[in-house]
Length: 161
Image (cartoon, rainbow, N blue to C red; front, side):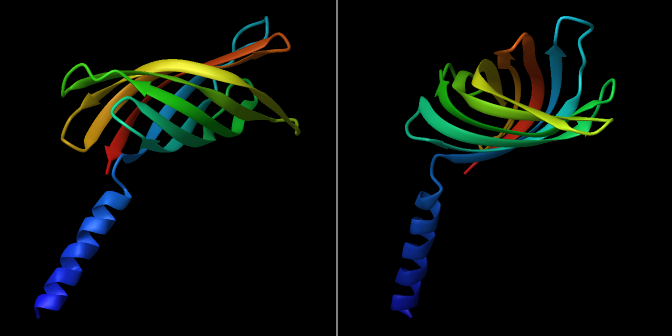
């Protein structure tokens, strides 16, 4: 009996530390694309998975898919890898900055796709609502390439393990 208790205790400790510093989240993004004429504003849902190496520095990946189009243009998919720097001010508010690389693929009603890959950067704030749950708002400059600029504003939820 003692061996079972010890085994279960060790298993729970190992599983708890295996995900220590990891987090997942989902957000709704409003994207503004400016190509010199009237801006278009498709929208997307984005999921993220990240790992904090210490209290301030982390790495995350993001994957998104379009949920709304504008003027016949939609987000087909987006993928990003970012370094994250979090500034722990207090238990409730945590501002952060991100810097990385993203790829965004647009789809057009008439057919066809076009992808833009570029350095991306942004900032946001996590607002704790419980120990492991936070809501966040964020602004990201997705790309500025070939006379076309895209940025996003998002609101979401994050769960920390």
